[in-house]
Image (cartoon, rainbow, N blue to C red):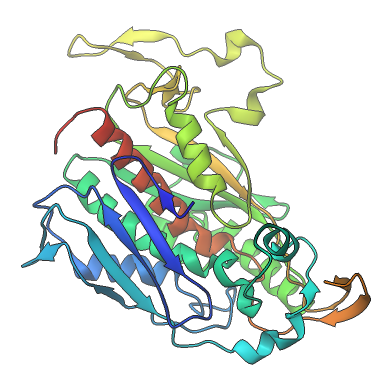
Length: 357
């Protein structure tokens, strides 16, 4: 499946070392002003080679829109786009043609399709996530008109974690450092850890926290269309994402129900609303009007620059010295991808609710 979404959809195409990657966005409401500088800014947040803690691959990631936009506004028709690949070093992967790398998709892809593109992982490469950031940027522009905002940040790298929830931090500081952490002191510790791991030829994982504000009451369904399930599916579709929780999530399993419940109160304008938000903005699969917050856990990148014992397609053992350019920690670049997938999901569910822009 190469299409994500129900009414607002992204169909992506392309491989890591092909001429280009791209996609078709369908269901985008007509009349939305497209801020190209904003779109490119979102792409720069994800692009490779942006700092010392990311991959050394350098791509401009300039988006070329082919359809669906006229005189700076969406027309309501499919929006086609491409992003040309300009920094492929395919020869770096020649020694992987017949090798199954540990914890990569090489083995499963070969078994499923009988063929695979060994250059940088081909279709399974995280290079594909650039297309998600294009769709996410457009979704954000539509959600902006509804007063819905999405902000993600790095909340943990390895053992270094923020100790408080999102309400205790100034999230406007997220982009002030290369690891995208709103706590400057913790950000420095995280950066030092990533650089240390990188110098050892190893990798490390972490957690991205995301906060959605301004979401109206009523998005999601009570059984199979639960909003939190859709967000989980969106996050777990991102390369290297291994876990998801929302609200108190896994942290709440040791608490009593009396500690976790969100009692209701009457607001100044006479409306009923939760007094607290331990539920994470979703109850019974439906948004309750409070900020939605969740966490996505990312594993350490599987590619190791040190020697590893591997098997080839014939079952013969080899010692692999990996080449190529890889992130020592995907978390800083995952922040805009998490935001993009959240934006796509929320806009899709908003349109499914029958609400108009």
